[in-house]
Length: 426
Image 1 (cartoon, one colour):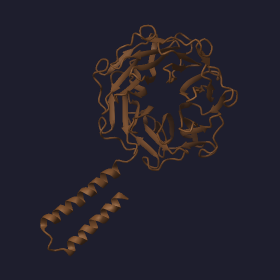
Image 2 (image 1 turned 90 degrees about the horizontal axis):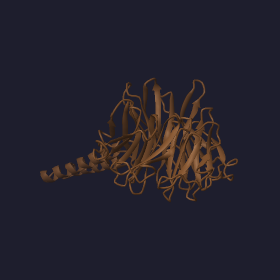
Image 3 (image 1 turned 90 degrees about the vertical axis):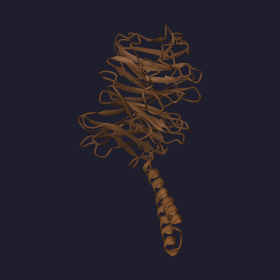
């Protein structure tokens, strides 16, 4: 509409010039200049639409860094300073990276912008979840062999906070069941919820295990061999866990604030869900959205972003799109999976992950949905956004966070590098 209005104004100016032949040349030039400026401004506004890369961030919207072999991001969080903190792995060791608000490496953090640590774990260490406290201290959850979960707390500059746990670390060790899915959440009182494998544990803000929670500090999940993929705390203190297992089962389980199963939710505290589950969000009205992947066609087999919404009691919300859920394909791509999600202030949901066209040709994929689950046609192309980095750089978004101004920050892997991108929300 803006462009049409500007063109109309330009036509009016031209007609006026034709009628007033005696108008001074300087005024004519001035009016033409104003018209041109309006057209340019209109074009810029049209180009800078929701879903476009934010050109003010990094290199035309993208930041990449490769600090070592097998580098990649798994998690992301924001500090109050607007710096972006990223968790992942470098050379088989847990890693935390800091990026400035304009998309540059924060060299004041750790060693040249990077912190690596083994977290007291024997091998295969990877930071799978990141959370930032109100004082900007960073909590990082790492897992590895032979099935350990370790939480480290770091000062805002990347140094270890030795006042936390035992010299900066706490966790569960040598459970015997390695897990490469985990989740971390902060309660309003500062206590820490951490899930990995078939257990969720709660730690005090000091790092000590909270033995009043569940069974001496841990609450078991109900699936046979589950992986915890997301934890969310409701305003009333109840705890939601989204999980899935290798057998193809997915579930949302709710616990009371003391770690006991909330039998008023779903069936004895649990509702069936997508498998694999990837992320979970609470909408402003309290309804629960779980994302992952779902089939979009059976022959040939295709998959897309999958969303299911639940009422607060664990029943499927049949008012959400098609009988409670939706599956979104990405044209030109055989498969897609949502690996992360976030809820905007207006209740709209952004899902992010990966789309595959063929082997080694995967790309960042995002979709935005209205609060009712319909694709938002004002975002990208028909509600979808794809960002490709070339056939030799397979890419996937693993985590997403929204800035206070609404801009969308995603982190993941681009080839063997950490990759961060920022997209416009409006």
